[in-house]
Image 1 (cartoon, rainbow, N blue to C red):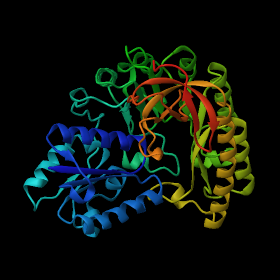
Image 2 (image 1 turned 90 degrees about the vertical axis):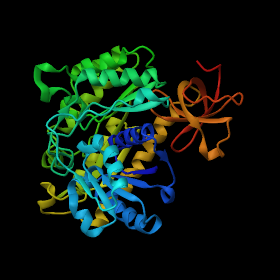
Image 3 (image 1 turned 45 degrees about the vertical axis):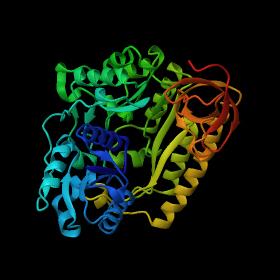
Image 4 (image 1 turned 120 degrees about the horizontal axis):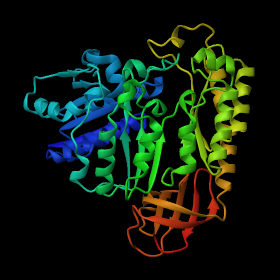
Length: 443
C-alpha cells in the first residue's frame, strides 16, 4: 500500500503529518506521488479563510487526479466541517480532528479493506492523546518538532483554534522527555517544542505537572541535543523564568516567535489579547537584556474590525520599536463561531490590502537590517540539506544559524553535511537569506 500526505497550516500540522508518515511506514506503507497513492491524507488549517479555500480546491482536484484513492481529511477544517464533507465531497471517506491522529493508521487499513466504509473521528479527548512511539525505529533527520500540548483556553476574538483543537491539555512531561530522548538517540540534533501557547504549559494540570521553564531546562539537558526552540508564545504568559532561560541554557537558541497581532491598545483589547503595547515592549526589553543577540519574529494582523489608520500606524511603530527579524502578516477574515465575526465596522478589502502592503514593505526593511548584521560574521550552521536552488549540487548547502536565519554556503568537498554543525563566514546578504563559505572542518 502507498500513501501521500498533503499538509496545510502550522508547525503542529507538520508535526502531526510527520508522525502519520512514520506510523504508516512502520506498518509497511510506502510514500508515493499523489497520483500513485492508495490513500491520500489532507491535513488542514482553518485559522484563516485562504488556507481553508485551498483545501476545498485540493479535494476537488483529487477526485479527478486519483479517483480510486482512499481520501482522508484531517486537522482544523475537518474538525470544523465534520461529516458535512461527505455531502460536498463524496469521495472523502475519512474525517478526523487533531485529537484523532493516533487512530488514523488503523482507520486507513480498515477503509482499504472495506470499500463501502466511511469513518468519522471528531471527538475531543479529556487529556492529551498520546501516540504510538515510532521515532526510535528509524534514523531521523537533524531537526524534529515535539508537541507538548494541544488546544487553547484564551479565546481571542478572531481565533477559531479553541473550537477546532479544543481546550488546553498539557502532555505529561515524562512523555515529552521520553520522546525527545528517543529522537536524539535516532539522530536528531535540534528539537522545537510546540503548542498553541507553550508558556501556559502545565497550568491545566495543577501541581501534578511542572511548568514550562522547568520543562525547557530538562529538555535542554538531554545529552547530545544541540539546539532547542519553542513556539508559539502568548505575551500575556511569558514570565521571568522563561526569559531568564535564554540567558542560562546553552542549548536554547536565541530566537523567539512572540505574536504581537496589533500595536494599538484599543485593537488589542477588542481582540481579547490581555496585554498592552507597553507591556509587550517591556518583554522585548527584558528578552534583549537576557540575550542581546536574540532574534524576534511575530504575527501581525491588519484590518481587524474598526481598525483605523491611526491604529495601523501604531502597529507600524511597534514593529520599528521591537525590531522584528521577520513576521507572518495577514488580512483579518471572519472565522465562523468567533466573536469578531459578529463585530460591526468591518474594514474594506481595499484598505486591508493597502495596509498589508505597507506593513510588509516595512518588514522587508527590518529583515534586511537583521540579515545585514551577519555580514562578515562567522556563524554556526546546522545543515538541513543541499540547496535545491543549485540543482541539488553536493557542494552547495543550506541550513540555519542559532537565530533561525537561513544560511547558504559552499562546501569544501562532496561529503554529505546534512545534520552537521558547520562554521560559516557570511560573505553576501540577500533578501531573505545570507551566503557564505566554510571556514573550518564541520564540528
